[in-house]
Image (cartoon, rainbow, N blue to C red; front, side):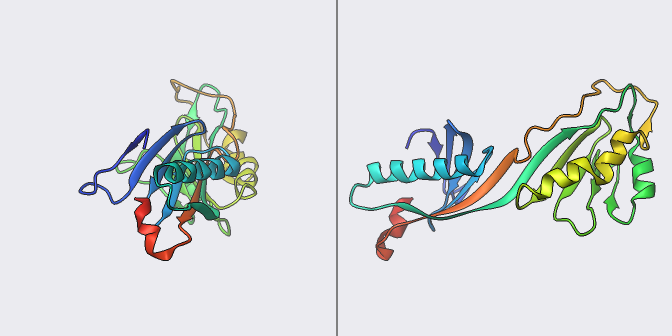
Length: 196
């Protein structure tokens, strides 16, 4: 297959890379396919269909199809405008410590788990925040506009130290990275392992 690598001694899946849509896929011998790096659910399904078409062309006696596809994780990136300062993560931890983890000597960011929400926010000094753990697009925008991200942009947790990169608020898409887990299956049960 073009754009793929497989070493059974190192990893159990075949790694496939596509440039359009730009994504990486892991094809397991069970027929499961994990897609990472796509911007929308449709791009994930399109890349799964592309793999099924490549497998069909390589093994004409078998029929490959996408059985189901589901989103496992959505990742978004936000930059909070901090002006000339940086986010004061110690102050954030002091006020939100019931839902936070912050150990500067182990990890440079604050890990915030909002109550009754599936998402996790990773907040950094520079004002960059990574939001992960959402299962659908409604989980991510509600956390970008409200909660601790809104408090960060209001100036409550900003320090006077200068930052090398203070950015404007922007999001790289609510579904910046979706990870559909797709399953390829041959209609003949005895031949499903022939996919890998």
